[in-house]
Length: 365
Ligand SMILES: Cc1cc2nc3c(=O)[nH]c(=O)nc-3n(C[C@H](O)[C@H](O)[C@H](O)COP(=O)(O)OP(=O)(O)OC[C@H]3O[C@@H](n4cnc5c(N)ncnc54)[C@H](O)[C@@H]3O)c2cc1C
Image (cartoon, rainbow, N blue to C red; front, side, top):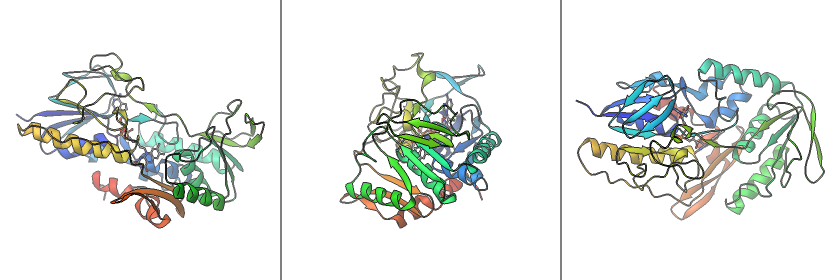
């Protein structure tokens, strides 16, 4: 009889583990969504409705042998998972990969789990955005910056202002990367104001058209027609809060060992944004974790000692397109990290926002 593996969450990390182990074990992938969401593509999916479908990859085409259950985990214990429907899935190995939520449109609305619903949401917000002249983005992290770049790419004449209460752009990245970013934002006419916390949030709902004014703590007044929230990552570990497995950290992440086992369990792993690791919360790290877990479960399936160990890296990397024509990056080299050219950022991310890579994972022709 085959061994069983249950993967909870089919994001960047979980879908990779499920796919890789599909031929060697009986895999069950659990996710409330109809499709994998390539979050890196979600901001262009907002500004280009004809292209938006590219951000979604149905789970139906991921596995050859395994099954996909469209449901949400509500509790996990050492033997298995309890789902919102009440169904139990017990397995020899469990991989927790439930990632994080981010405010829409960077990640989909919580309640929108079908592709059709998610595309409807994006089309509706596009309709609100298209007719506006002045766009306010709160948060000057990578998500806010990318959103501004995508908006300017489609509507160069819209006024786009980004406010952030911190006083540095991309802290921790190389000075030449940060200078290059400033230069490109100026060239695109994106108004970034730092040290600019607001006295109160806009009175209009995020993503809805309607003129409003906000005031910064410095007393500046900004008038805009629509706004987007680009801050506030939420780690998806509520289903572990009942303590049937291990206690979570203060940040609601899951403590893991070097082999990425949940502390205390050789047959349970946690990867990606939910793992309590110093790695940045990025898809590239979730996929690195997935590779380690695949190696370890493969060894266990073969009756060998699992010995793949994850070495968290202090190096900061980023590919940050500003639409299809500009962007900055920082990538590892044999001599440490270095700035990437706009051409490299375009080729590695900006051109298709990783669509081709996931088309191959999900067997999309
Ligand atoms: C706009 C944007 C752009 C980004 N660009 C990049 C980039 O260019 N490069 C990069 O490296 N990173 C990027 N990131 C970060 C990246 O998206 C995250 O780090 C990544 O999604 C984490 O992957 P994960 O596998 O941990 O989980 P996720 O991709 O978050 O997937 C988690 C999955 O678990 C499911 N789930 C949640 N709760 C449950 C539950 N209770 N039961 C079952 N299933 C559940 C969800 O439906 C989801 O499918 C970007 C993020 C955003 C928002």
